[in-house]
Length: 340
Image 1 (cartoon, helix red, strand yellow):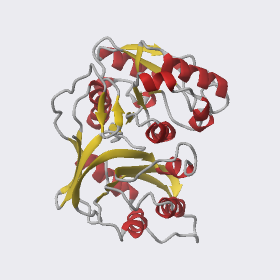
Image 2: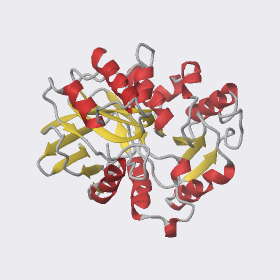
Image 3: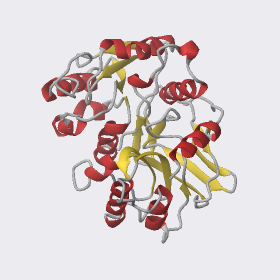
Image 4: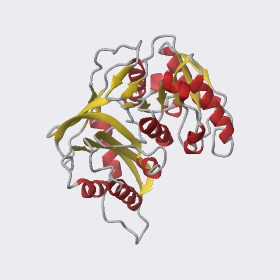
């Protein structure tokens, strides 16, 4: 795969559709059995915690200032600045910090400061009883896919797959337009604006139009959760996947896992985001592209498949609402995903 061409075409042609009217944010609503947490209003508090990798107070400061400029209050958790090797504190510290934010009624949304690795180490010890009664938006991606899958599997509560604190620009006035657009998409998701994105035409796309609940995230995380209490149910869903730092053969193996476990069989549609691939070792070339691997696994199915979507470990990583009904349209002009 020509990765450079892939990313450049992505940035040049993936765009955000105009925002639509703001949805009600005072009560919970239902979305085909998924609960939608209340949307935020001015003055609401967003908590920042680090349930996975280590991050400093200095590194989260741009995100704090930006969210305050949106009219929100920010509460910084105890894990910010703590370190236990690669983690944002010990398992016990990360567990306690996240639990406190789940239980605090004054916190209306929780932003995970960064990804890395570590959420799977604490997910089974979290008590979601208070959160179930009064859901709140939880924000993050990459390793935070553990949580998106866990909420979908066990509680049917929507969440936001998006950039985190470590992706906010240090200087907003000097940020690239794509950086600004993706960060603003986090705000739009939190306040309840309908979301809509387009992606460029790709000759590998499979055309179609479907409605369904959106689920997904990092491919390697989804695969490793198979058979666990966080195993993602993809039946009758629109699934999106992305990944980074993997060999092509490893991605192919993960896709076989999804196919053999039935996760690709009964989809409404499939969205393929960014894949930053490790170059093959010399003499061990895999011989297939990402497109080849995915199309091989879904060739017998009739649902639409959209490639080159603006989600993943890249600058054009827009906020997506997991657990919310979306319309996916793939046609001769490209693809569109929008909330219903």
